[in-house]
Amino acid sequence: MNETLRLRVNGQDFELQVRTHHTLLQVLRDQLKLFGAREGCGVGMCGACTVLLDGQAVSSCLMLAAQAADKELLTVEGLAENGRLHPIQQAYVECSGYQCSFCTPGFILTTLALLEENPHASEEEIRDYLAGNLCRCGSYVKILKSVKLAQQQMLVSKNL
Ligand code: FES
Ligand code: FES
Image (cartoon, helix red, strand yellow):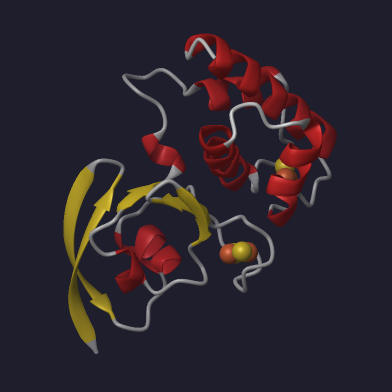
């Protein structure tokens, strides 16, 4: 069965015909061609499919697309502005916080949710918040470095 669904993704409105049983991840990738959210485990265990829904990090593989209706969705494609990387993206680049980068969009969006919610997060709080994102390449040390650099830069830019 199909339904008409209105989604707001990266500041843009879409009206789509979607299969009622399709997940948000399927609709983002298959219909909107936004490939930043990845399908790793498909069962809520790896964080590769993370997107922000009204600022909260969610696993898009676990949600029906209809659950995102009329909410603000942010995918990694919506982070850069006017061709400039977001400070978190820049920090991951500078610290080489990735290897194959399959997990990177999920980590970057979870980092954003964390730093918006808790700008002064301690190392323990960072580790705890990112625990639901897995990196099969084991780049955790550099990912942590990236988060800390992004945190410093965001604190300076917000005068906190
Ligand atoms: S693909 Fe969604 S949590 Fe792994
Ligand atoms: S960089 Fe390869 S899975 Fe994380």
